[in-house]
Image 1: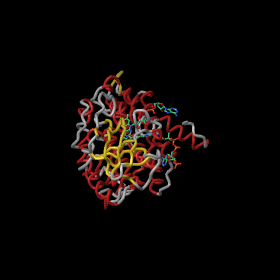
Image 2: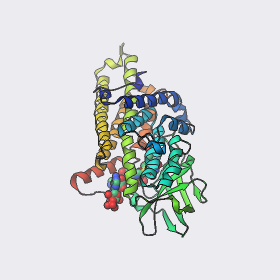
Image 3: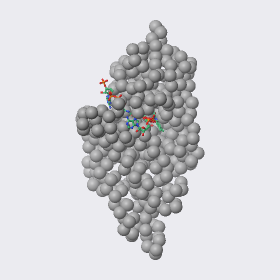
Image 4: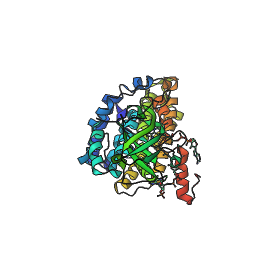
Amino acid sequence: NDRFESPDFYVLDELLTEEHLLIRQSVRDFVKKEISPNIEEWAQKAHFPYEIVKKFGDVGAFGPTIPQEYGGGGLDYISYGLIMQEIERGDSGMRSTASVQGSLVMYPIYKFGNEAQRKKYLPKLASGEWLGSFGLTEPDHGSNPGGMTTNFKDKGDHYLLNGSKMWISNSPKCNVAVVWAKNEEGRIHGLIVERGMEGFTTPETHGKWSLRASTTGELVFDNVKVPKENLLEGKSGLGAPMQCLDSARFGIAWGAIGAAMDCYDSAKNYSLERIQFGKPIGSFQLIQKKLAEMLTEITKSQLLNYRLAQLFNQGKATTAQISLAKRNAVEVALNIAREARQIHGGMGITGDYPMMRHMANLESVVTYEGTHDIHLLILGKEITGIAAFE
Ligand code: TGC
Ligand code: FAD
């Protein structure tokens, strides 16, 4: 089934090491076996398959770049990108589960946590024994997280946390949440909040048309007593959650191209099988144009993502470079999902083919981790030196 093999028009595989190829193959096999046969049913029923969490742990999808001594993969960013690409070839909601766990929960605990926190949480998160969530967005503060009102007060032997977070991936099922809140001086800090702490609830958000196999909800804090040892001491300020987003946005850039590849492959195959006017529709120039443009955009994005991974490996990737890649990949994937859907005609709207699910999923991906326009404005600031946010 070449839906899992292509495209590789500029022979990027020659730039991958044996280890990269092995990692990609193992995740590809995993997606083929565990996700693709079931994803339509999960999405149609808005079912989050909780058992996938442990399986993701087994295949090494959680925290690929976290050192092995904490249960991570100890891998480079090309490996991380390939893992996200293959998972999102299956489904963006499944990739969300993995992105949040690795880049937004394990990463801050590894980067900003102390040794006791690393040892307590990272192995359980890496293995999938625990599921994590990341609380930055609030009902009134999405694109502008710096305006957050969730806050904590020092009560001597503990902190008292109040406020709420909205649109939080994994929240209804999470065992642990990395939550960003302001202290009494208005400085943003990360706190590790555990399920079971009194006053902490995680109501689920229902009625989504997008990322239906991923579970999304709120994090509500009503006078939650958080032990002082749960503060992430290594970094404070908005830059701390933003640094986590750099890593997660990188994964999305690779992931979204995985979704695009799935749509492209489905369209290519369908165009060779579907006969109209006595010929395969792939023989018509307009269909060939669509396929040629899809291949062009996927190929450009693959090269861009590969170079970005090299910059990550060297510790040189900038926020603006990451914004460009995330913004590009999601737009490319959304356009390809729409064009591929058209190539399938009426059949394209059914769950027999993946395009509508990818297209609906990508409407979340184009919004979360910084909207399409916010990334444009980050680039605008980089180019002109002038921030247009305010
Ligand atoms: P601004 O003044 O630009 O920056 C405030 C401070 O933060 C620092 N900073 C960064 N540091 C490291 N890495 C980055 N990427 C950084 N971006 C900013 C900056 O240097 C500054 O530090 P300091 O020390 O000078 O104070 O902040 P601003 O308030 O003007 O806003 C900037 C803006 C709009 C670009 C930013 O807030 C933004 O990116 N907004 C979008 C919000 C967002 O992406 N939310 C994501 C929520 S998590 C999520 O969606 C997960 S979905 C996952 C899934 O399911 O897969
Ligand atoms: P708003 O910020 O209200 O934006 C609305 C519109 O206004 C957008 O088009 C935006 O581009 C535009 N806009 C805003 N400001 C400007 C400006 N200055 N100039 C021009 N245009 C502007 N968050 C988390 O913290 N953790 C998660 O795990 C998480 N998971 C998510 C899962 C899903 C399925 C979704 C949909 C969201 C998730 N989010 C999560 C939240 C996500 O990051 C936010 O939705 C996103 O940052 C946008 O915020 P908002 O929805 O409040 O939109």
